[in-house]
Length: 456
Image 1 (tube, rainbow, N blue to C red):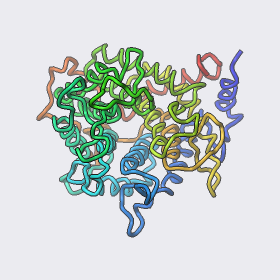
Image 2 (image 1 turned 90 degrees about the vertical axis):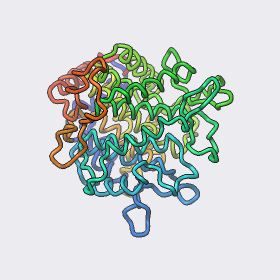
Image 3 (image 1 turned 120 degrees about the vertical axis):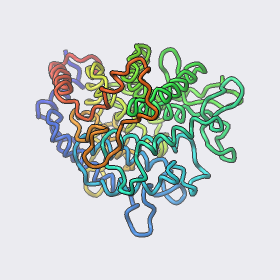
């Protein structure tokens, strides 16, 4: 007999229960999902004040006590909108996205001086991840001809590859520190987030530019995380440890760490063709779905149940959904496993969108089934949940953009000896999955309607 969740999803797919909260969504209709996503994106921008006179472009109001949000969350905002733009074709917020990214790029390194006192390697990397996403999805490069999104991302990766950013001695030698500057609190902490973001950035740069050296640097960081136990043999991904006691691991698990690693492994597998990366990808996907999607709905397990998630943590589900959606498109063989879970989670996410004056602001605790509190983090996460179940993309193929976007041709650094040069040169990041993606989604939806998908 089908479970209650399966029956609810069957009703949704059959159009019986298409209205979830204040958003009218038919999850069998991609156009309906796109329309709902655009509404969520518009409501998200209500939190952003950077286009107003006297306000700082690119960032959400903050940091505390001047507002709720730290600098890195601006990168989460633009990443969610870039993904939304690519998957829906909605260009409404292009000008704000362009201005916001450029305002915070510093000296082309996403290291603006006015954020020095709180600058972590993870913060800088998240902005670089927004830049590589802009390049991957064909978002137009700035008109000054001196800035390309891919170059901004590469500069950050090169800076974080330097020894002065890393632990120089002890059991954790070579691992990226959390904070960049020695005078910052947290400089003595090794953050998995910083290392996972570096690995994710490197894997995508290697794939996008066909650069073997970058792939090797990225791989070495994954190996370090595994060797010191931050990623265990069951693919649990832990928070980190202090430099002086790096064997005393903080075993809190947050979804964005696992998400960054699994998406990175998917890109490494597509770039190298090495089955070891496929094994890691599969292990991380399996454990991530098991741990962070109880009953098929995304939950931030280390903080959500007790209502302890802070402002930063409310952005994590967005990275989780985007990474899994990206992986399903990049490696279609994973779609049958990933998409059913993303679908039920997106359903639950939209059900919380009943708050605010307009009655459609979204909440964070999706498993609770009702709106709790509006925030930019919750809004970006629901936007990403909707985008993650879309199969068609609207962006230009990297290297073939008609509007001056970043090219993926990096002939000065490419190396055809990566072991799978055909995949690296021909299998560009898929900005239009086409028939294969539609077939996979159709099979998955058909199975869901029949109530045969395990775990729902």
